[in-house]
Image (cartoon, rainbow, N blue to C red):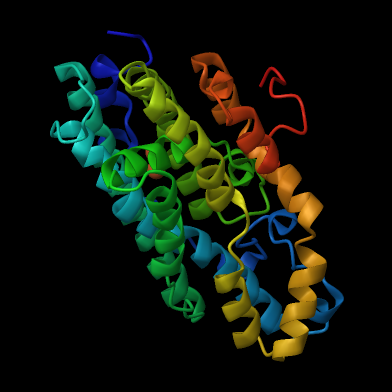
Length: 315
Ligand SMILES: [Fe+2]
Ligand SMILES: [Fe+2]
């Protein structure tokens, strides 16, 4: 068993096995932040700054709620949809019993990530009196599924596997930076740190799994997969503005002001740069496995804005 795969470690080291329930202590009145300000792109916009202090506080809390709400839905509806297919042998890729056992472990991990994300939303909402804006996940999932349907018609399971390989090999700023920011509520930092630890392990699993999957594909199928991946990366990583629009509206901005704030706060070039940074490990995986060498792949990745910078940065 590979040292990264964790058969001996999972029972001692997985968050669901080891970590206590994270609780909101008496921190809300001490000026602790809900989320690092630098990770709330619209937080410093003049129109947002002009809102009453309470409305700005509610916006920050709801930014956190959106992140946690997204996690709750994504883990259960996207990651575990594919992970259970790997675990139960229904994914169309020949896998060893060890791989299936690891997939069951990840299934438990992701279920627990969903549980504690939901738990933290509830704890903070009750204590602060700030209600979450309902999170509509279905449009996001449908957009992701549409990319698979177009590039891999009639192969929904393969598309679902690729979604998860892409997402589980991304490195997002939130997982890295929230735990380090001592201004942020302890329960938030602990929860994100717990999650990041498990994800390091998942990253290794899904990188291995993709190598197995890729090795078993025909030449024609590889071409289709290579052309599907850039769209999956883009739709996983470009900012989803729908929920932001909803919270800015609840904060009291007019429809025109909301659009101004979004336009100023999410400049395209910056979103694209952030996407390439978060995708760098996924891109390196696709380069190493030969995905980028198949017909049309370079063009597709380039057209998606994914090859404008060096892939390797050593991190
Ligand atoms: Fe997770
Ligand atoms: Fe994961």
